[in-house]
Image (tube, rainbow, N blue to C red; front, side, top):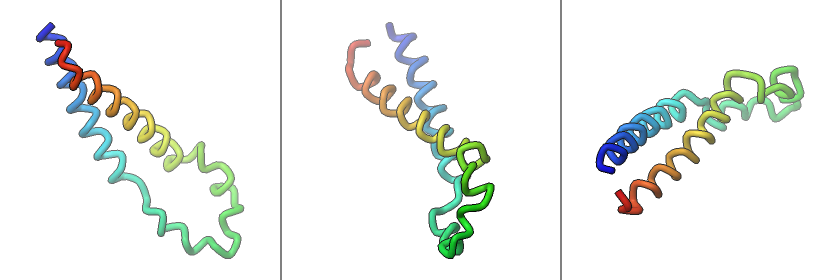
Length: 79
């Protein structure tokens, strides 16, 4: 069981590093404030989920859930 705990800890560290990198790669919310005049209705505004920024947001959500699940599992002290 100790081997499983070590493997989960290594995966947890990799998820933590990945989460930090993904958050730092994203644009700030203030970057889009110039588009208040209606420029957000462009092609890129409508298809944000398919863009690089949309992909980063999806990956961040997945890694955040994985982070929470691994943190709970590692704190159960079952291993």
